[in-house]
Image (cartoon, rainbow, N blue to C red):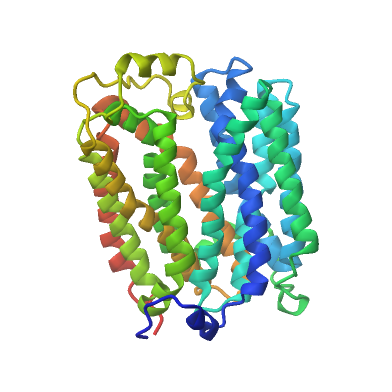
Length: 450
């Protein structure tokens, strides 16, 4: 248990199945790339049909709310019929939903495309279940971390591709069709590169209840599952509140526009991917998933509190009149569109320097470390609570509750922002996350592997 350095020799000793995991990493990356091409532009699809801020909020919430219903059932079906068939169904429906979005003749059609994808789009949860099949308790956190790393890389590159697609044409159909193309590529990877990880003899054939509408209730009754899912829900609710307000906060405090925030996202992505690819496996083997969950929550709390204390100092190249001009000639920021008019005010000239930007960059480091560690380790603990025949079901529950938290967080934290100012959501989030870390330390006793 004294191993620290994440060397190739240690990974080989741990028996990590790189050859089987590589196709899952690739198809997850390509699939997320297609999704993140669309996400930054969803508000524009609504605006194109004259949507109000509340209707744009409905567009954003349609997918995660539909996932709350669909993903647990899809995960349970993958336990019964295998990962590959359900992964293909999920990817095909995602591809169709992007085509529906590209051809949407009305606002209702836009919303329908997101609901359709949410009900059947269990791509990430099914890929995680497949990784769970080919790993054991010793290296599962590392395997689940790989899907998180693929998500992080796709999250960085997807918005860049969407901007390039929009530069090539004024048609919003082009980014949607680009996303459909990436989704089709992930279908091909699944068909020809992915080997089924759940053979027929290991499937839950006798567990018929796992495929009915009571899957969620049955899973939450398993000892320890409700606690872990609750921790993940609250964490995602707080963290996605931070993510959704990041652009408005940095605009109000630091005068950052799209380019500056893009650099921050690159920093977040770099830290997240580094931790998930290089460190999560050795740390999980040395300290165990329970301690890493508590550590991740503590890091998230620290980062949020540091962000809340960011000095109100604009970056050295900030000029208020130029920033106002740029805002007037750019598409409406997606967070602003979802939340409506929050009263964010451009900071005045005369308070420029490097202090504010450097402080906030420091804050996002523990935030990124916590975000990199939390979900893989919670999901690894969840799989230790259920038999292998329920891996897909329990990971589907995890994904569904995380999606539900993402649906409700922007509006909740947006109201705090509007009522009490830019720093208030981060203060509230930091305090709540610290309380969650303390609660997790008490509630997860006995979850540590011996």
